[in-house]
Image 1 (cartoon, chains in turn yellow, blue):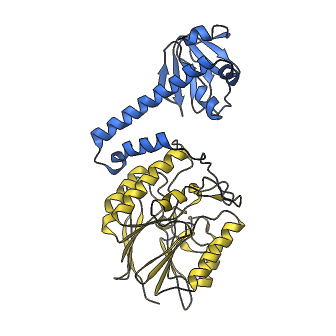
Image 2 (image 1 turned 90 degrees about the vertical axis):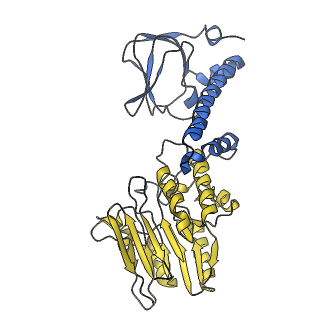
Image 3 (image 1 turned 30 degrees about the horizontal axis):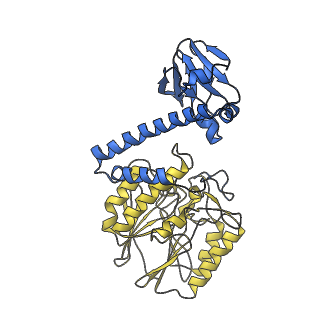
Length: 244
Length: 160
Protein backbone atom coordinates (compact mmCIF):
# COMPACT_ATOMS: atom_id res chain seq x y z
CA UNK A 1 0.00 0.00 0.00
CA UNK A 2 1.30 3.42 -0.99
CA UNK A 3 -0.05 6.18 1.22
CA UNK A 4 0.39 9.93 0.77
CA UNK A 5 0.19 12.23 3.80
CA UNK A 6 -0.29 15.97 3.43
CA UNK A 7 -1.65 18.41 5.97
CA UNK A 8 -2.13 22.10 6.61
CA UNK A 9 -2.90 23.08 3.03
CA UNK A 10 -4.62 26.15 4.52
CA UNK A 11 -6.68 26.93 1.42
CA UNK A 12 -3.55 27.10 -0.75
CA UNK A 13 -5.24 26.19 -4.01
CA UNK A 14 -2.04 25.49 -5.93
CA UNK A 15 -1.15 22.94 -3.27
CA UNK A 16 -4.57 21.32 -3.60
CA UNK A 17 -3.98 21.25 -7.37
CA UNK A 18 -0.67 19.51 -6.78
CA UNK A 19 -2.28 16.86 -4.61
CA UNK A 20 -4.92 16.28 -7.30
CA UNK A 21 -2.14 15.78 -9.86
CA UNK A 22 -0.21 13.17 -7.86
CA UNK A 23 -3.13 11.44 -6.11
CA UNK A 24 -3.53 8.68 -8.75
CA UNK A 25 -0.01 7.49 -7.88
CA UNK A 26 -1.18 6.45 -4.40
CA UNK A 27 -3.56 3.87 -2.99
CA UNK A 28 -4.56 6.20 -0.17
CA UNK A 29 -4.32 9.98 0.27
CA UNK A 30 -4.63 11.40 3.79
CA UNK A 31 -5.16 15.11 4.41
CA UNK A 32 -4.71 15.57 8.13
CA UNK A 33 -6.57 18.81 8.80
CA UNK A 34 -6.43 22.58 8.37
CA UNK A 35 -7.93 22.48 4.90
CA UNK A 36 -9.35 25.95 5.51
CA UNK A 37 -7.55 29.09 6.66
CA UNK A 38 -9.22 31.43 9.09
CA UNK A 39 -6.96 34.33 8.09
CA UNK A 40 -7.78 34.04 4.37
CA UNK A 41 -9.55 36.92 2.62
CA UNK A 42 -11.95 34.33 1.21
CA UNK A 43 -15.10 33.81 3.27
CA UNK A 44 -15.03 30.59 5.26
CA UNK A 45 -18.29 29.44 3.66
CA UNK A 46 -16.79 29.93 0.21
CA UNK A 47 -13.64 28.07 1.25
CA UNK A 48 -15.81 25.14 2.37
CA UNK A 49 -17.41 24.92 -1.06
CA UNK A 50 -14.09 25.10 -2.92
CA UNK A 51 -12.31 22.62 -0.65
CA UNK A 52 -15.34 20.34 -0.76
CA UNK A 53 -15.08 20.29 -4.52
CA UNK A 54 -11.35 19.45 -4.34
CA UNK A 55 -12.10 16.61 -1.97
CA UNK A 56 -14.65 15.21 -4.41
CA UNK A 57 -12.10 15.34 -7.21
CA UNK A 58 -9.59 13.52 -5.01
CA UNK A 59 -12.22 10.99 -3.93
CA UNK A 60 -12.72 10.09 -7.58
CA UNK A 61 -8.97 9.63 -8.09
CA UNK A 62 -8.05 7.43 -5.11
CA UNK A 63 -9.05 6.42 -1.57
CA UNK A 64 -9.23 9.71 0.28
CA UNK A 65 -9.23 10.24 4.04
CA UNK A 66 -9.56 13.64 5.71
CA UNK A 67 -9.59 14.81 9.31
CA UNK A 68 -10.30 18.23 10.74
CA UNK A 69 -7.86 20.71 12.23
CA UNK A 70 -8.34 23.82 14.31
CA UNK A 71 -8.77 26.01 11.21
CA UNK A 72 -11.66 23.83 10.07
CA UNK A 73 -13.97 24.57 12.98
CA UNK A 74 -17.12 26.34 11.85
CA UNK A 75 -19.64 26.23 14.68
CA UNK A 76 -20.88 24.52 17.80
CA UNK A 77 -21.94 20.90 17.94
CA UNK A 78 -25.03 19.79 19.93
CA UNK A 79 -22.91 19.79 23.10
CA UNK A 80 -21.88 23.41 22.63
CA UNK A 81 -18.32 22.54 21.69
CA UNK A 82 -16.61 23.92 18.59
CA UNK A 83 -16.51 21.48 15.70
CA UNK A 84 -15.87 21.21 11.96
CA UNK A 85 -19.56 20.98 11.15
CA UNK A 86 -18.93 20.92 7.41
CA UNK A 87 -17.28 17.51 7.74
CA UNK A 88 -20.80 16.09 7.64
CA UNK A 89 -20.96 17.33 4.03
CA UNK A 90 -17.65 15.56 3.40
CA UNK A 91 -19.00 12.30 4.81
CA UNK A 92 -22.17 12.69 2.75
CA UNK A 93 -19.91 12.89 -0.30
CA UNK A 94 -18.62 9.43 0.54
CA UNK A 95 -15.29 10.51 2.01
CA UNK A 96 -14.19 8.94 5.33
CA UNK A 97 -13.65 11.67 7.88
CA UNK A 98 -13.83 12.67 11.56
CA UNK A 99 -14.96 9.82 13.78
CA UNK A 100 -14.86 7.20 11.03
CA UNK A 101 -12.75 4.06 11.01
CA UNK A 102 -11.99 2.26 7.79
CA UNK A 103 -10.29 -1.01 6.98
CA UNK A 104 -8.07 -1.49 3.95
CA UNK A 105 -6.76 -5.05 3.77
CA UNK A 106 -4.81 -5.74 6.94
CA UNK A 107 -4.79 -2.06 7.91
CA UNK A 108 -7.29 -0.17 10.04
CA UNK A 109 -7.30 3.63 9.90
CA UNK A 110 -8.92 5.56 12.75
CA UNK A 111 -9.75 9.14 11.80
CA UNK A 112 -9.81 11.46 14.80
CA UNK A 113 -11.45 14.88 14.70
CA UNK A 114 -10.00 18.06 16.13
CA UNK A 115 -11.69 17.91 19.54
CA UNK A 116 -12.35 21.19 21.26
CA UNK A 117 -13.85 20.38 24.63
CA UNK A 118 -14.19 17.62 27.21
CA UNK A 119 -17.07 15.85 25.46
CA UNK A 120 -15.19 15.81 22.17
CA UNK A 121 -12.13 14.49 23.94
CA UNK A 122 -14.16 11.69 25.52
CA UNK A 123 -15.54 10.79 22.11
CA UNK A 124 -12.05 10.48 20.63
CA UNK A 125 -10.93 8.33 23.53
CA UNK A 126 -14.00 6.13 23.16
CA UNK A 127 -13.23 5.80 19.45
CA UNK A 128 -9.68 4.64 20.24
CA UNK A 129 -10.86 2.25 22.98
CA UNK A 130 -13.38 0.74 20.60
CA UNK A 131 -10.88 0.32 17.76
CA UNK A 132 -8.20 -1.08 20.08
CA UNK A 133 -10.38 -4.11 20.68
CA UNK A 134 -10.37 -5.03 17.01
CA UNK A 135 -6.99 -3.87 15.81
CA UNK A 136 -5.69 -5.86 12.85
CA UNK A 137 -2.07 -6.32 11.77
CA UNK A 138 -1.57 -2.58 11.26
CA UNK A 139 -3.34 0.27 13.04
CA UNK A 140 -2.98 3.83 11.74
CA UNK A 141 -4.40 6.99 13.31
CA UNK A 142 -5.06 10.31 11.65
CA UNK A 143 -4.87 13.09 14.25
CA UNK A 144 -4.13 16.72 13.45
CA UNK A 145 -1.86 17.70 16.34
CA UNK A 146 1.39 15.73 16.90
CA UNK A 147 2.18 14.57 20.42
CA UNK A 148 4.06 16.64 22.90
CA UNK A 149 7.63 15.68 23.64
CA UNK A 150 8.17 14.49 20.06
CA UNK A 151 10.52 16.03 17.49
CA UNK A 152 7.45 16.14 15.24
CA UNK A 153 6.08 18.95 17.44
CA UNK A 154 9.37 20.81 18.01
CA UNK A 155 9.10 24.35 16.63
CA UNK A 156 12.78 25.14 16.93
CA UNK A 157 12.28 26.93 20.22
CA UNK A 158 9.76 24.84 22.12
CA UNK A 159 7.68 21.69 22.14
CA UNK A 160 4.22 22.53 20.86
CA UNK A 161 2.51 19.18 20.97
CA UNK A 162 -0.68 17.61 22.21
CA UNK A 163 -0.27 15.94 25.62
CA UNK A 164 -3.49 13.95 25.20
CA UNK A 165 -2.25 12.33 22.02
CA UNK A 166 1.05 11.52 23.72
CA UNK A 167 -0.89 9.71 26.44
CA UNK A 168 -3.07 7.82 23.98
CA UNK A 169 -0.07 6.75 21.90
CA UNK A 170 1.61 5.39 25.02
CA UNK A 171 -1.59 3.61 26.09
CA UNK A 172 -2.70 2.10 22.78
CA UNK A 173 0.59 1.90 20.85
CA UNK A 174 -0.75 2.37 17.31
CA UNK A 175 1.62 1.41 14.54
CA UNK A 176 1.52 4.77 12.81
CA UNK A 177 0.11 8.23 13.62
CA UNK A 178 -0.35 10.74 10.79
CA UNK A 179 -0.38 14.38 11.96
CA UNK A 180 0.28 17.97 10.89
CA UNK A 181 -0.54 21.27 12.65
CA UNK A 182 2.99 22.32 13.64
CA UNK A 183 4.65 23.63 10.50
CA UNK A 184 8.35 23.87 11.36
CA UNK A 185 9.55 20.57 12.84
CA UNK A 186 11.00 19.03 9.65
CA UNK A 187 12.99 22.19 8.98
CA UNK A 188 14.40 22.87 12.46
CA UNK A 189 17.40 21.42 14.30
CA UNK A 190 15.97 19.11 16.91
CA UNK A 191 12.75 18.74 14.99
CA UNK A 192 11.81 16.08 12.50
CA UNK A 193 9.13 14.85 10.11
CA UNK A 194 9.24 11.47 11.82
CA UNK A 195 9.52 9.99 15.27
CA UNK A 196 9.57 6.49 16.70
CA UNK A 197 8.48 6.08 20.28
CA UNK A 198 10.39 4.00 22.78
CA UNK A 199 9.25 0.69 24.19
CA UNK A 200 8.41 -2.84 23.16
CA UNK A 201 5.67 -1.71 20.75
CA UNK A 202 6.96 1.55 19.28
CA UNK A 203 4.76 3.84 17.21
CA UNK A 204 5.83 5.82 14.18
CA UNK A 205 4.72 9.47 14.24
CA UNK A 206 4.74 11.54 11.05
CA UNK A 207 4.27 15.26 10.45
CA UNK A 208 5.06 16.59 6.97
CA UNK A 209 5.25 20.25 8.12
CA UNK A 210 4.34 23.08 5.81
CA UNK A 211 6.08 25.16 3.15
CA UNK A 212 5.11 28.02 0.88
CA UNK A 213 4.72 27.61 -2.87
CA UNK A 214 2.67 25.36 -5.12
CA UNK A 215 3.95 22.07 -3.74
CA UNK A 216 3.03 20.98 -0.22
CA UNK A 217 5.48 19.15 1.96
CA UNK A 218 4.44 15.54 1.94
CA UNK A 219 5.25 12.10 3.24
CA UNK A 220 4.98 9.00 1.11
CA UNK A 221 4.61 5.73 2.99
CA UNK A 222 5.29 2.53 1.09
CA UNK A 223 4.00 0.05 3.62
CA UNK A 224 4.91 -2.99 1.55
CA UNK A 225 8.48 -1.84 1.00
CA UNK A 226 8.71 -0.52 4.56
CA UNK A 227 9.86 2.99 3.69
CA UNK A 228 8.81 6.54 4.44
CA UNK A 229 9.91 9.43 2.24
CA UNK A 230 9.55 13.13 3.05
CA UNK A 231 9.57 15.51 0.09
CA UNK A 232 10.00 19.27 0.38
CA UNK A 233 11.81 22.21 -1.16
CA UNK A 234 14.82 21.08 0.89
CA UNK A 235 14.93 17.81 -1.04
CA UNK A 236 13.94 14.26 -0.21
CA UNK A 237 14.69 12.16 2.84
CA UNK A 238 13.91 8.46 3.24
CA UNK A 239 13.90 6.18 6.24
CA UNK A 240 13.33 2.47 6.66
CA UNK A 241 10.36 1.51 8.78
CA UNK A 242 11.92 -1.12 11.01
CA UNK A 243 9.41 -3.79 12.00
CA UNK A 244 8.36 -4.13 15.61
CA UNK B 1 -38.71 53.83 -11.18
CA UNK B 2 -36.94 56.35 -8.98
CA UNK B 3 -33.23 56.99 -8.93
CA UNK B 4 -31.09 57.03 -5.83
CA UNK B 5 -30.59 60.81 -5.96
CA UNK B 6 -34.29 61.51 -5.93
CA UNK B 7 -34.87 59.10 -3.07
CA UNK B 8 -32.05 60.45 -0.90
CA UNK B 9 -32.53 64.14 -1.58
CA UNK B 10 -33.23 64.84 2.08
CA UNK B 11 -29.93 63.42 3.34
CA UNK B 12 -27.20 65.86 4.41
CA UNK B 13 -24.18 66.22 2.15
CA UNK B 14 -20.54 66.12 3.19
CA UNK B 15 -17.49 67.37 1.33
CA UNK B 16 -14.12 65.66 1.24
CA UNK B 17 -10.82 67.10 0.14
CA UNK B 18 -8.07 65.14 -1.64
CA UNK B 19 -6.71 62.48 0.74
CA UNK B 20 -9.55 62.76 3.24
CA UNK B 21 -10.52 59.33 4.57
CA UNK B 22 -14.21 58.43 4.39
CA UNK B 23 -14.06 54.80 5.60
CA UNK B 24 -11.26 53.15 7.52
CA UNK B 25 -10.53 49.42 7.29
CA UNK B 26 -11.52 47.62 10.51
CA UNK B 27 -13.73 50.34 11.92
CA UNK B 28 -17.33 49.68 12.90
CA UNK B 29 -19.88 49.95 10.11
CA UNK B 30 -23.31 51.53 10.25
CA UNK B 31 -23.49 54.44 7.82
CA UNK B 32 -24.28 54.57 4.14
CA UNK B 33 -22.97 57.15 1.69
CA UNK B 34 -24.01 58.02 -1.86
CA UNK B 35 -21.42 59.59 -4.12
CA UNK B 36 -22.71 62.80 -5.69
CA UNK B 37 -19.55 64.02 -7.36
CA UNK B 38 -15.82 63.53 -7.27
CA UNK B 39 -13.60 60.48 -7.12
CA UNK B 40 -12.74 57.97 -4.39
CA UNK B 41 -10.10 55.27 -4.14
CA UNK B 42 -10.51 51.96 -2.30
CA UNK B 43 -7.42 50.70 -0.49
CA UNK B 44 -6.80 47.24 0.95
CA UNK B 45 -3.64 46.85 3.03
CA UNK B 46 -2.39 50.10 1.53
CA UNK B 47 -2.85 48.90 -2.05
CA UNK B 48 -5.37 50.59 -4.31
CA UNK B 49 -7.88 47.98 -5.46
CA UNK B 50 -10.57 50.13 -7.02
CA UNK B 51 -11.69 53.66 -7.79
CA UNK B 52 -15.24 54.94 -7.51
CA UNK B 53 -16.32 57.82 -9.72
CA UNK B 54 -19.88 56.88 -10.69
CA UNK B 55 -22.39 59.40 -9.26
CA UNK B 56 -24.98 57.43 -7.31
CA UNK B 57 -22.49 54.78 -6.18
CA UNK B 58 -23.45 53.46 -2.73
CA UNK B 59 -20.75 52.90 -0.10
CA UNK B 60 -20.86 51.13 3.27
CA UNK B 61 -23.81 48.91 2.46
CA UNK B 62 -21.99 45.57 2.39
CA UNK B 63 -20.47 45.92 5.86
CA UNK B 64 -23.79 47.22 7.16
CA UNK B 65 -25.77 44.30 5.76
CA UNK B 66 -23.22 41.71 6.85
CA UNK B 67 -22.90 43.25 10.31
CA UNK B 68 -19.14 43.53 10.01
CA UNK B 69 -16.45 46.13 10.31
CA UNK B 70 -15.29 47.79 7.10
CA UNK B 71 -12.95 45.61 5.05
CA UNK B 72 -11.20 48.37 3.13
CA UNK B 73 -10.26 52.02 3.42
CA UNK B 74 -11.91 54.61 1.17
CA UNK B 75 -10.40 58.04 0.62
CA UNK B 76 -11.01 60.95 -1.71
CA UNK B 77 -8.80 61.33 -4.76
CA UNK B 78 -10.13 64.84 -5.40
CA UNK B 79 -12.74 67.15 -3.93
CA UNK B 80 -15.82 64.97 -3.57
CA UNK B 81 -19.39 65.34 -2.34
CA UNK B 82 -21.40 62.53 -0.77
CA UNK B 83 -24.81 62.18 0.83
CA UNK B 84 -24.55 60.68 4.28
CA UNK B 85 -27.01 58.49 6.18
CA UNK B 86 -25.44 58.06 9.63
CA UNK B 87 -27.97 55.33 10.40
CA UNK B 88 -27.79 53.24 7.25
CA UNK B 89 -30.07 50.55 8.66
CA UNK B 90 -32.81 53.11 9.25
CA UNK B 91 -32.42 54.38 5.70
CA UNK B 92 -32.91 50.89 4.29
CA UNK B 93 -35.74 50.04 6.66
CA UNK B 94 -37.57 53.26 5.89
CA UNK B 95 -37.65 53.12 2.12
CA UNK B 96 -38.18 49.90 0.19
CA UNK B 97 -37.19 51.53 -3.09
CA UNK B 98 -33.80 52.57 -1.68
CA UNK B 99 -33.33 49.00 -0.45
CA UNK B 100 -34.21 47.64 -3.88
CA UNK B 101 -31.68 49.90 -5.55
CA UNK B 102 -28.98 48.88 -3.07
CA UNK B 103 -29.81 45.19 -3.61
CA UNK B 104 -29.75 45.69 -7.38
CA UNK B 105 -26.29 47.23 -7.11
CA UNK B 106 -25.04 44.27 -5.08
CA UNK B 107 -26.58 41.79 -7.52
CA UNK B 108 -24.99 43.60 -10.42
CA UNK B 109 -21.54 43.35 -8.86
CA UNK B 110 -22.11 39.66 -8.11
CA UNK B 111 -23.01 39.14 -11.74
CA UNK B 112 -19.77 40.88 -12.77
CA UNK B 113 -17.73 38.55 -10.61
CA UNK B 114 -19.63 35.46 -11.71
CA UNK B 115 -19.27 36.21 -15.40
CA UNK B 116 -15.56 36.94 -15.01
CA UNK B 117 -14.91 33.72 -13.12
CA UNK B 118 -16.99 31.66 -15.53
CA UNK B 119 -14.91 33.02 -18.39
CA UNK B 120 -11.72 32.18 -16.51
CA UNK B 121 -12.87 28.59 -16.46
CA UNK B 122 -13.48 28.68 -20.20
CA UNK B 123 -10.07 30.10 -20.98
CA UNK B 124 -7.92 28.30 -18.42
CA UNK B 125 -10.03 25.26 -17.67
CA UNK B 126 -7.25 22.68 -17.68
CA UNK B 127 -5.91 23.30 -14.16
CA UNK B 128 -7.86 21.43 -11.45
CA UNK B 129 -8.58 24.59 -9.47
CA UNK B 130 -9.88 26.47 -12.49
CA UNK B 131 -11.75 23.55 -14.00
CA UNK B 132 -14.02 23.53 -10.97
CA UNK B 133 -14.83 27.26 -11.01
CA UNK B 134 -18.20 26.88 -12.69
CA UNK B 135 -19.33 24.17 -10.29
CA UNK B 136 -18.05 26.15 -7.31
CA UNK B 137 -19.96 29.23 -8.44
CA UNK B 138 -23.17 27.28 -8.81
CA UNK B 139 -22.74 25.79 -5.35
CA UNK B 140 -21.98 29.19 -3.85
CA UNK B 141 -25.08 30.66 -5.42
CA UNK B 142 -27.21 27.86 -4.06
CA UNK B 143 -25.55 27.44 -0.68
CA UNK B 144 -27.98 27.77 2.22
CA UNK B 145 -26.20 26.81 5.42
CA UNK B 146 -25.64 28.31 8.85
CA UNK B 147 -22.87 30.85 8.55
CA UNK B 148 -19.47 29.32 9.35
CA UNK B 149 -17.82 30.91 12.37
CA UNK B 150 -14.10 30.21 12.89
CA UNK B 151 -12.29 29.68 16.16
CA UNK B 152 -11.21 27.03 18.61
CA UNK B 153 -11.71 27.16 22.38
CA UNK B 154 -8.75 24.82 22.75
CA UNK B 155 -6.51 26.95 20.55
CA UNK B 156 -8.09 30.41 20.87
CA UNK B 157 -5.01 32.17 19.53
CA UNK B 158 -3.42 29.51 17.36
CA UNK B 159 0.17 29.69 16.27
CA UNK B 160 -0.86 27.32 13.49
